[in-house]
Structure formats: C-alpha cells, structure tokens
Image (cartoon, rainbow, N blue to C red; front, side, top):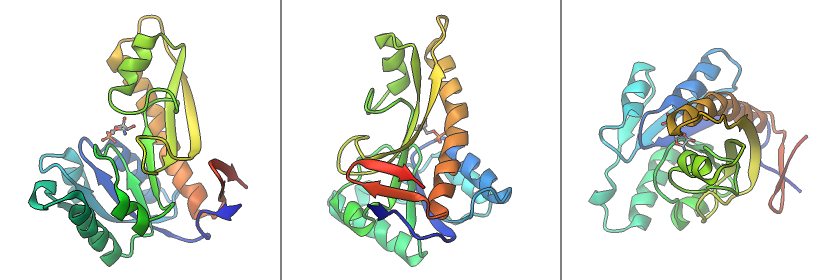
Amino acid sequence: MKRLMEAGRLRLGLLASGRGSNFDAIMAAIVRQDLNATMALVISDNREAAVLQKAALRNVRNCFVDPDKFTNKCEYEAYLVELLQAEGVNLVVLAGYMRLVGEVFLKAYKDRIVNIHPSLLPSFPGLNAQRRALEYGVKYSGCTVHLVDEGMDTGPIIMQSVVPVAQDDDEDSLATRILVQEHKLYWRCLQLIAEGRVWLEGRRVFIR
Ligand code: GRF
C-alpha cells in the first residue's frame, strides 16, 4: 500500500477546456480555507475557454497552450509539464479537459493527476456521460473523482457521489444535479490528498 502524497500544502495545476465551474468551486474552497492548496497555474487548450477569464478574475496565473502549434502530442505534453514544473505543481487537476492524457504527462506526474467525471464509473466513460446514462435508463448516476491512467476515465476511483435520476429529467436537469455534487466532491478529495490520507493498493484507493 502506498500513500498518494505526504501531508502538506498542495500546489495545483488545473487543466480545463471550457466553462470552469469546477475550477471556481475549488478556488472557493481554497479561499474559505477548507482546502490546503495554492492554485499555481491554469492551462487551457481552448483559447475561448471561460476558465481562463475565471482564473484571471481570481488573479490566478493562466495560459492558453495551442496543441496545434506542436508537431505531436509528446511535444505538446512536454511543454505542459515544463510549465507545470516551473510553477512547482505537485498535483495536476483535470476539470473538463477534453483530451486523453498521454505517456509524457503520465510519466512526469505518475499518480499525481486526478480527474472528475460526471457518471458513476466504470459506467459511461467518455463524452456525453449524462445523456448516455439517461438514455440507458439508470435510476442513479453521479460523479467520480479518479486518478488518471492511460485509458479513458479508467484510473483508480478515489470517491464518488450518487444522485437519483428523476422520471422527468432531461440531459440538462441531470447534468445540473450531478454538477452540484461535483462542486462538493472535488475539493474534498483534494483536501484528503493534502492531509496525506489517500492510499493506493493496486486499483483500490483507501482513505485512512
Ligand atoms: C464536468 O461535468 C466534469 O465532470 C467533466 O467536464 C465538466 C467540466 O465542467 N469532466 P466545468 O468546466 O468544470 O464547469
């Protein structure tokens, strides 16, 4: 059994492609001092991503990195790692980052990349998870915070929150109900990591 991280203040680097509501929820927890972390850097692969404005509003260093400017994924990721390491980032937080993380990133931040996904994994990995859960007819869905490995939403599960699916739900109403839980779950997981309480054995995560 191995401890994910020793107890101490986290230096977070957050990667996102869009809206940034999870970024905001994490920042709010830092400001309230519920989360022992510094948001060192926000990176987006999308120039228009609202998360960049949200970061600027909170005086968090942020940048757009254009993946098309690189000859391949390895070079793109090597650059991201350089940026993150220059800021002393010790935990990478994916929050609506719409790319699969590749080998360069995984090697540089082994067991130090977390993601949030809007379903109860391993059900409905990948895109449009809320719509697919609804169409499948599940009675409960939710969100999952997990460590990132080379697969699509396949890494070890840290914590999950469950929400009921209502008969009159549409994709938006279900996504909204799940998002409320995302905003409560993500910073709590990060805080457990900051407290040195998260342990890993194979695929199983233990909170001690
Ligand atoms: C969230 O639903 C998250 O679970 C998924 O992407 C969405 C990001 O939303 N990975 P936001 O950008 O944090 O508002």
